[in-house]
Image (cartoon, rainbow, N blue to C red; front, side, top):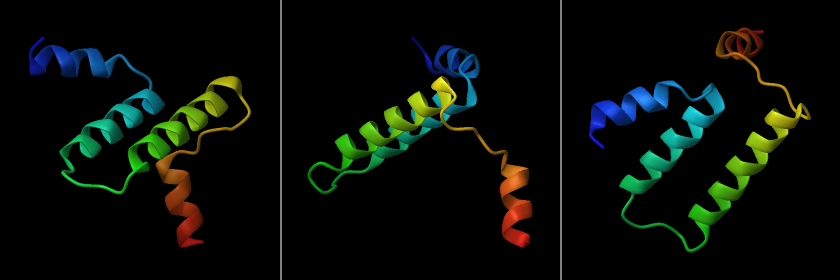
Length: 71
């Protein structure tokens, strides 16, 4: 699979899945990290995804976050 195919496939994912993919890709660039950090991130990302998918948690748009911060 080439980069264009990967990008096209990634565009089909929902926003939370794309965020998880982005995190994993960025994490893969790091050369050293504390033991267990990667597994902790994976577990947290999976937990958050399940909360969103189940309706237990709701997503917030970036615009809403910026409005709240500006208060």
